[in-house]
Image 1 (spheres, rainbow, N blue to C red):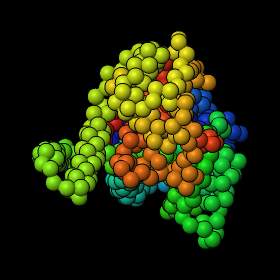
Image 2: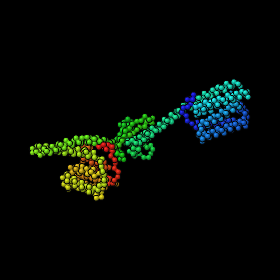
Image 3: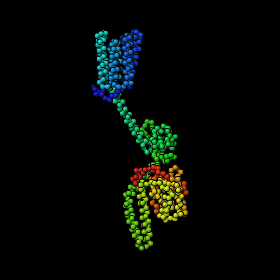
Image 4: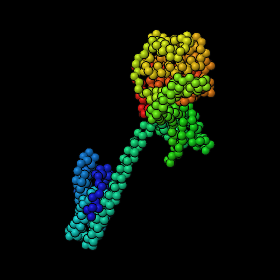
Length: 537
């Protein structure tokens, strides 16, 4: 029997307070009855109103009031307080039952209420103890009444039945209370688990690189993560309307919900650029929809990084295998030139030498990608650097010094890796010379402070026909070239080296001729660290 009552238990002060409040009301009713006209109580409960009745009611009410205050302000010794109040009820109701005429008066049923309440909030063996006290008081009162007040002896049987009811009520109430407590504890644990799961889910959503929106059936944004707030430039409003924040996205969502559109759209915003949205229904009763936002620019950058990682691994594995036989072929070609054969042989040897040189340039360019993260940025004064670069470039390429004109402000400096800047300018000027008209100042290298604070711009401008509109989107892609002897890596490497130094390299879209601009920092601001994919190269 003990095991039935020793399960999950916690002091239930709030139900105990309600129990004391009920007893306080009951005491007030007793006092009210004591103040009734004479004869009313005698006809109903066989009680005589008087000072003894009134005094007993006041004393009982005072003790119950003290118990109520203790259960509110002194929440310690729960079992002691409950036992004291239960003992008080047994004595008070037992005395009232004795005065009222025994078990037949029906006053004893009040003990059932007190005992049931005490069994709901009490613990283990105390429940049986309370039932035993009530049984002892009821039987003792009935026996004393038979001996001293002439109660009907048959009332002892009724008292025994009522006592059996005390034990049945106590046991059943305790079992019910234990079931309620177990369910409350389970609900509390599940609530804690749900709260923890909600916190974890919220943290995961907040750390996602994609934007996440939860939109209800009325088009109101119920939840969003910081990335979505930044992408859509959402204000401080708690639940904004999607149609007001991004009409394009709202229209695409409505079309999908109506079954007239695809489960996603691509759209552009001035602040965030090109975005892609994907829609997914949820199983919620409110019909909420999940909207996932992706930055297309970041997706393209990720794909580019994966391409670079694969290219870096390929470079590391085959560079040695290619250059060794390539050197042997080139050396054999040089030896064959020393022999006097004929015009046909000379032409074939020239083709062989040109293609060996082209393959060597491709290998050198590919290897250059592997060195893009090995940078040592420094503060470069552009005028002397560019002058030295042009002198070296003209001697190496054997071009007329008048073709390239240098226009760089004397006080402009750039924070950049020296070797990277040299490689970028070499690729840009070689491309410009190839497409220029070859006249005086056909190619201009212009350096000046940029329109944005802390930026410096280097412009490479030629007087050629410009880049055709059909290939503008492809000129920075690897291995794309319009020249027969080109490798297709020059502009691609130039842009990659620029990004490694925190700079940008762009083609001026509205230029009538070839016009590239390199925009970098003029100070030692922190540069972006290489990504993991780039580090693999």
